[in-house]
Image 1: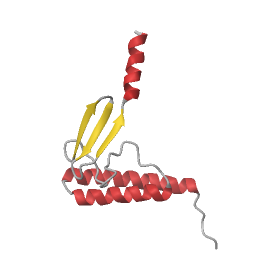
Image 2: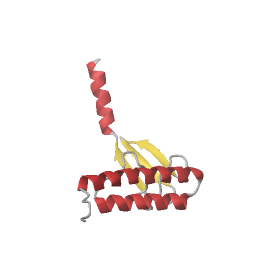
Image 3: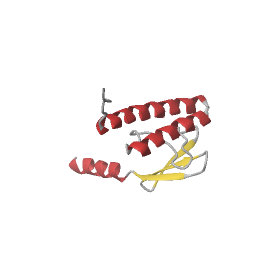
Image 4: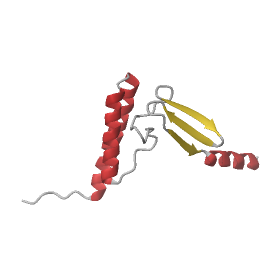
Length: 114
């Protein structure tokens, strides 16, 4: 009797589901105040992401330096400045800056159409 083969697509699907579960559990633990357990869950999700080459779930906010789930107001500070979103981790002090130019360009095109 031979083993049932699992395709790469099935492996990636399982990885996505498990990562989503771990990210959700991590956010819940962070809100409860158990940051060590939250970091552990986020670290496990990141390890799955690296091993299976599947990107992290969309909208998962986490610190790339210390693997802490970032909950605005609890352990991170979010600032908007110069067409960038600055997210400051209050655990390790790292800063992540992302542009939000795309949104402003969409607004400009909407204004021009009027």
